[in-house]
Length: 486
Image 1 (cartoon, rainbow, N blue to C red):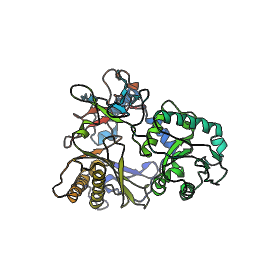
Image 2: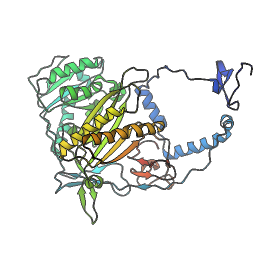
Image 3: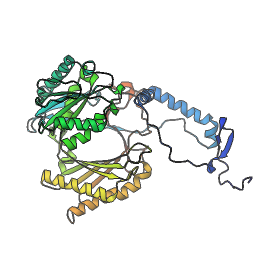
Image 4: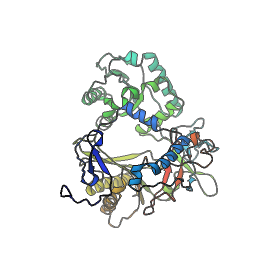
């Protein structure tokens, strides 16, 4: 009562300020002062963080058990009355069946089967002679070199390395039925661009601004016609590849100029690991409006049938929804995006984007309604019928935002359906996806599963009891093979 303040929670610990924390202040009298900009981690810092946190399951489990013991000994934890049970929970789980993939015509597909024997790591064996369902239409291919500051194009990627890389890419594309003809390359110095040849070797520095890169590429591609592909070879990640201007202008190039852009790191281009070209071509073919393959699912009585059973039951629109925010402290707006699949192969997509108030996660009801309405109309134009089921995957929602998103965005989907046609009521499934959860799962067989490295649970493991939220239908899903960490 020295300062005329009566504490409501005198039992809470004190907060120390100053050198050595000599000035002690009751916690309930402290406030957080806003406005301090958070510094973004550099590429090296992110790489070091991943390395430090990527621990094998056995090591991670031992650290958790050590932490459990330390909590009971820590004076601060005891002051707050915190206790941790020394035992881990045993929870049941199951592994979902892995689908096969079909190449070529639906009536006579070539089947890519998943790895068997409990060793599935998200890989399928592509059968000999397999081709894309619909190869993309690429009429002109252009190479763009984007060396880092201080390197010319010869030291970044010489002509011999460029020709060897393109030969491997073109050969693998031909096996899949995709024709990529880069033609004779024209070596260019500086920023002079010649348009008499469809293949251009352009050298841009990473000191160029995003506007300069976009203007130069727009000028280069302006006279090349439609169905043009830019293969942009950029520095490796250790050379700040993620901050390269060409990445910042990728979406602008696609939308404003109308070209497909595929990035490739220079080290991977020089020495591609096994399967690299096929993975890159899967992305490239979709950007060229092609169709790669389709899922094959088992049907009652045996045999395989194209398409997922859930999508075969009735016309279904899959939506993916997320909000992009600028860096902390920025006054730039946030952007809400909605992507929908138009066909049963998940290869044709339609996208809607809206600008929003900065740092706002929930999409306003009017914006969400208009985006969903555009998706429904695009689905009808593509298929000739409206969807009878809508499955929306929503990313980036925190636990304290569930109620707001439920009230606003699901209501907006319903309003969009009513605006299309009175009485139109498709089934709506709304799934909130959260990555990087705090739960860690370990297998019982001495920390290992046959065929799995480091004892991680196999891909497609589902846990939907015991350690889930009872108020919602929640579950934990391991979507892919754990190459690092737990």
